[in-house]
Image (tube, rainbow, N blue to C red; front, side, top):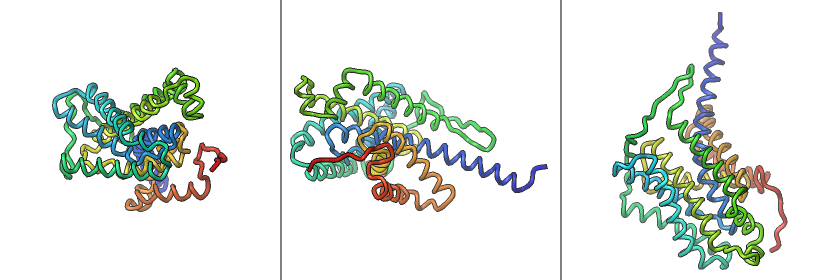
Length: 305
């Protein structure tokens, strides 16, 4: 006969599994957005604080595409391509003219771009949250394993994130474009001497990073059934924390940082105080900057100033 203590322990394990699953789901979204931060920083050493807004733009493109009756398998790539094209335009019009002006002007410009998209979205789309339309070719079901419940949305988010990350790994490590990206990241001037059009590579990096953020926006819209113009602010900041946690400029680090952050947040919600959910992300940022500024997978490097 099982005792009450054994029963409590079993329920604790189910609760732990539930919060871990929720954390992996949330962390997958952070990882997709963090990849854009880390890719852009790795190429041109720019912390693009407007990156969270590409997540919002992708969500709204998916919102309008699905509202018009477009099936998910078409709306999803449209959202990715649309947010990627917006990022390319912003890079060409906003970031490229100040590329050599120093890091502080670039940082201020990125913050200004972020604010522009937030308030432009509020003026054109309205500040109220909007219900994400029901996807006609996709049904969200819930599967039960004992006391553990897994939704189709969670499976889709985790599996889509995995597929996109595998694709990104293949792109960066096994294609000529990826080799050019790595060369530009290592030494931009030497890459130009070798005949690489670094402007195109930088634009392509912005496109890929924003496309991943746009994909995350659609997945989150489906998961939480709501979108709004300010939705990219907090996830964008947390994705930046994830990129720093894993080692900014390191692609595997962005994935690791996103998953660690998502799991930490959900464990805090489940076993401590739910109102500390946002605080834990920035607490982790402070700790990592104090204890290991290069991030979990980063290495200390000397920089000439």
